[in-house]
Length: 246
Ligand SMILES: Cc1cc2nc3c(=O)[nH]c(=O)nc-3n(C[C@H](O)[C@H](O)[C@H](O)COP(=O)(O)O)c2cc1C
Image (cartoon, rainbow, N blue to C red; front, top):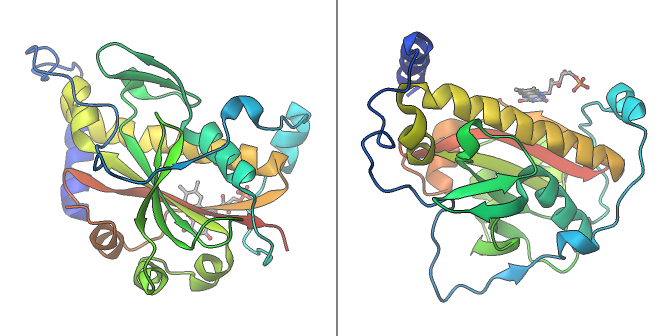
């Protein structure tokens, strides 16, 4: 898999024009969000309009943002989680033709990322695996059965952080959404987009006094398997732990 990604990135570096893409051929636009069963019980998140704003000096934010790897037992509130999700993937507008405008920039506004969450310490939520539905600003429970934490743990290397944090963000990419526009350059853009998302998580976390650690060192195959992804059409890109600072 790594070899494939590496080769694709090298090839992509040589692609100057986005020729022969499905967009140019006039094929249907991919949906801006992965579908989910119609009878799902969604968990509504506090509306972004009602989230508390946190006054912060921009230069202070630049100076003091740093990676934090030690977390307390304290729970996050649902509002805090909602704020972090809004700042990382919040949908500000849904435009025609499968375009969403979000709180983060994205190449071609393709927004090919999905956010999975292992939630362990959030008031009012059962521990388990969830997916953030950015358009609905809601959570989709994926697996809250016992044992899900142990299965996901296999995907991480610094187990202490996974065990102690309040929430682990896992960003996956739906390749089709980016490929439709950008063909061979898609992987580059997906990874660049993910950087913006995680940076917003760092900055938003800082304003709430929440610690954040980006995680690039995870086990792709294990996490793809636990998230039920095929590793080709959709695959793990990036992760981050967050939690109240110890
Ligand atoms: C792409 C990326 C991947 C990272 N992966 C990990 C990781 O797997 N484990 C970890 O402990 N920190 C990880 N980090 C955090 C970096 O180690 C950290 O940003 C760096 O040491 C600089 O420290 P600072 O964030 O406090 O400025 C990652 C950061 C980035 C940007």
